Image 1 (cartoon, one colour):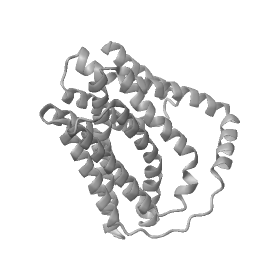
Image 2 (tube, rainbow, N blue to C red):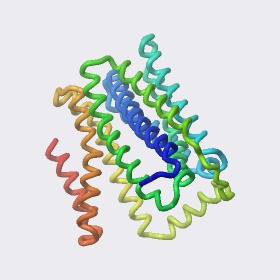
Image 3 (cartoon, rainbow, N blue to C red):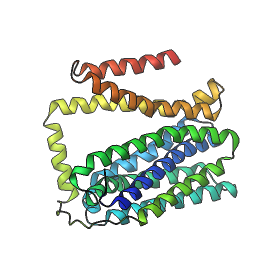
Length: 297
């Protein structure tokens, strides 16, 4: 039973739940808006590219800077920016002044925010809980994140079948607002972080370590191809569901919810299988995944 700093933990729990829900709305709405505006799968691909590229470069050097400031303040500022982005988006929709370039700009900013928010969110829990409470607390947080990741696309699809997309964006803004208020109630224990080296020094050491291990290099190439396949899937799903299959947005939401559901089932199966078939699990999983898309084609 987590008793120490229970109010602070509840604040983090509520903040994570509403943040994940708002993020799921954000992803779905931006994808749908881009596709409706352009009718182009290439625009959908660019939406994701403009999110991941700034996110990747921010991750290279942001770590040492996050350690210098209050995690609570960092998280609050990130959620305020995300809320303002949602307000700008709904305002542009209502005034009919939005464009694909505007959506691209929102994606770039959002891509820069997440590498700041996520490490701060992960690092704040040990500052309010005892060490023996962390495992249970992390499990609870992970569970609510998975629930919101699953329910977010479904809710977005169902809402879009009956409501204008502006209302979904308003809900998104309210989710980030709720997350911000929850974080404001958090009582963070200030922990003096150890002084880290310059990001460029850590980056060089990381590269050297990476290329000194051939297995890690091979795994990097392997997972690069896997992530490429995942990226193609994300981009092609919306036009496939709504155009080729001529289904509603709720069907698209259900399809997208299948990914996190699959992650949960896979994690449970992996726990039961253990190390019985070793690396063979990777290839079996990829073969099954590839088989499902061959069947779709």
